[in-house]
Length: 515
Image 1: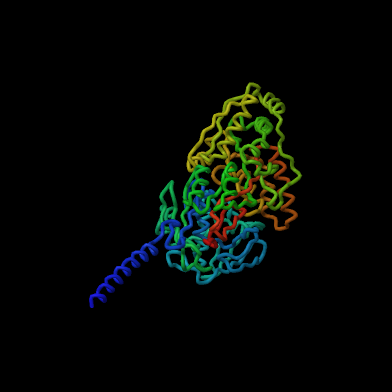
Image 2: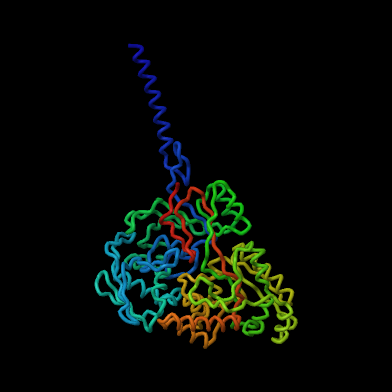
């Protein structure tokens, strides 16, 4: 009897100890915390260099916002990583005539609030885009959207519009839920509701945005439960976050840190082509930048090769046109401005600025752009132009350049659709001055006409002819300084599988998992 009692006591102690160990092994993991013998990982932590501006896809067109919105929303048409246009929320479409398109909407698609996607939501979304100063240029060719029944809409364009399908794949054309938008009112950008693989949970401004898997996603649930987008401005800090395991993915590894990531035993560097173009803008409506000779002088005074070597470690291609070689109708016959300080001084003298002038160049707190600004400052000083660098917070930067308060600025543009209409119309058509894209406030009637011809033509050859001529005139007018076509990269833990770079920079994490 005593032996049995001791046995029971010992057995009880063992069971209690086992329960304690078991409890430790099943405790909910922090981001990547080990549980038992193996880490349970269901949270994907991503860092990018700026916070989103809004999660209302029709209220902004900046890259940081679009990268988050990509996970929350879907579009009627989608572009693959190979830039192939495939069905999205529209399971099929048919071009009835030159200006009429019929779209068949998928049945049974759910919004995050439980509402079913209907054709009325599509009409509401497109009408809302057309009313937005930020993204109307993407869909302004559309004249009307007619609801035929719950799952069919007719989209009519004002004129034939060749790039319609490409434009409908843009993240800014994401479909929103009419009820959710109406209920949220002005706060919708902080309370988004889409049909995408992840639904919005919270936003700690300036720090992080948290998303959660949407189990009713029409393509099936994502592999990870939670996605956190961290705002980490300093590129080296993003790399450190990878090394410490705090981050799973970091966008835009700085050139100086690329080898550090690539050679790390637990990390991987993923690189790929981009549809981006970096440029230095000039306010063409302000003196002295309203003088073409001054603008050309600045182009000759800036050594772009030095920027590519010193800042990018060679990871860029000198730009000869506002659109890159991966974009349809790129004009590869154009020659970029060569570095020629003597020619620059000569042009300044002809323009009446023999002794130079003082000006400012704006940038946000992106380290690459800050380095570019410093190089430009030194090079322009050589021809007598005294440049003060003014860094601005990202939201203020976009707002103030849209208003035309700047002299010069550094920015990039991604031809998201891989169609020249998106790469040229927004940046150089006179109707797009300001926030729509034309922050140079550039105007040329002939360019306007050519860009209009390019977008209304259906024949690819006619479109190519119009766009190549427009690129030629733009480069000759020198409304800005074309710098380089960038490559893109991310750093990631080697345990991250299934991540693919999209050339537009809006990377989907739907297929990402942990090994």
